[in-house]
Length: 172
Image 1: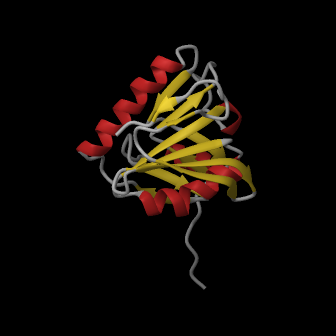
Image 2 (image 1 turned 135 degrees about the vertical axis):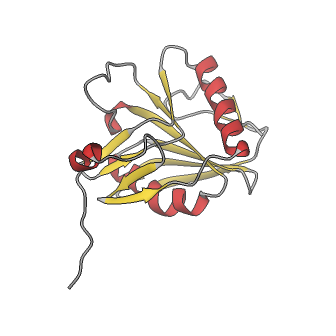
């Protein structure tokens, strides 16, 4: 029987891959879709919003997140506890919540990445569906899924679990 080779995170990090655009999901390497103008604009708006509201925290834009020994993701934004990440990649315990912006990648984000965020213990994931004009909130991980799912429209206000007193207006 022919079986694919599964990479560990350590092996993956040693591969001569492009600087950005690939992720390791349970040992398998995935090429990410190129970033288009709508996606870039939305990520920049989220970045500005998060930096303005949470200046004491680290807003990581399209940076690495190691969720397991065989999983390396690059969420569009991750709100992290402040820390020294020079010698290690941020992991699930460092993450307050993740924002994924989906233009052409909604199915990939929901079917492939979301279960891995849940399994890794990321407490909250927001997925902005640019085509559907909505923000999908996933909270309270349990196994490979989230127990709570909320749909919010642009212009409405929502507070992250980590900061229930801070309401953010969902950007367009």
